[in-house]
Image (cartoon, rainbow, N blue to C red):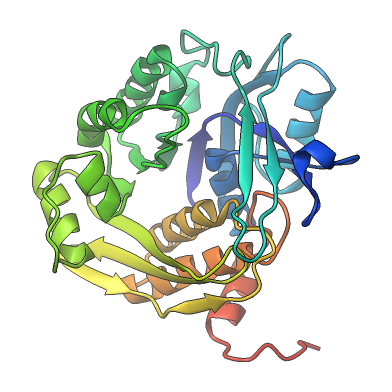
Length: 332
């Protein structure tokens, strides 16, 4: 199996029960997660050696983060600790026609305040096959824009593949700022999670009314010929509780599409995209054929919707059983 480093901020999530407003909640469920951390958990579940690099508060919450990661087999040798605060976010669960609401409280976290790389990069990337990071990290500050590029450059310098999930968050930065960063970062990327909306709104590729996702993948690849693989999901939202999900993979000039899943009901949508990215990287790293890889990644994303919390909790065998089954009968 591969050796992988995922880097980003991990936060404490506080969730109200379905049907309870945040401003009326008397108790909140506690979870831990973040885009890159969720990918790390998925890959560890599939048997890869995964290191998670971040910085957390040197207190009970930071200890809980470390315990969370280790419980899924994610190594924490590069998890820095410093007195301060852990970023948090609050979730008011949607249902039916009411959307889920997320309130962030992450400003001033020990990770967000970093202004220099505090890891030994030679040690961090030693014998590593893939470095994974997302667009959430550079959105935290101008310092992190620069630091993310430096990390990508260091990874590429030792022959490590770079995986990047665009993961645009409108509450963190503008489309213009995100696009400017992408144009600097994507020349260092090998595997890219991005869809047609990223192409149009972040990279300025002209929208074509009748064009499918293949058109946008081709346009992005022309801009960044170094990128070997593009992948994304297409989500149809019927309600907060009922979605359809389908995956797309573009590799070697061809686009592969998974079967379409009806997800009904959704238990927890948060982290579904991260489960997809983790599944996709696993497919690439284990040399699955393209159709098998996109089917696996999409099945992993769908399964995430059926469990609470931010991260995927399924093994490779369980994902395969799900992707190959058309029945929801009891497994005995």
